[in-house]
Amino acid sequence: GDVTVPGARTPRHWVRRTNLVDSRTSVTDVKFGPKTLGLVLATCSADGVIRIYEAPDIMNLSQWTLQHDINVKLSCSCLSWNPSLA
Image: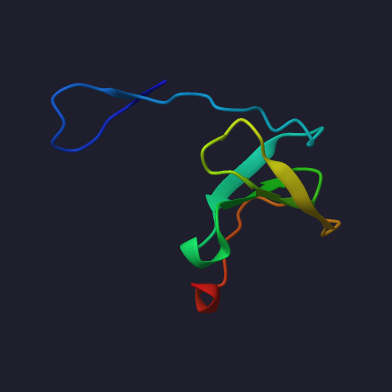
């Protein structure tokens, strides 16, 4: 879809590189991890599971590996990375 960037003359477009299909319910938040951890991504979902993915090859963003599957047993609507990891 289109993304509005302040100061840009034309809309920017997102390019889909992969589909993460592990969640069976709505994904409610997505956050990239701090640079110090490499290219990692966390998702949380309505089923109460936080998933951590890693892109082992930053030149091939179609491949993301599920690293951790954390069941928090409650619906999750928001997540954040610990700032001390940055």
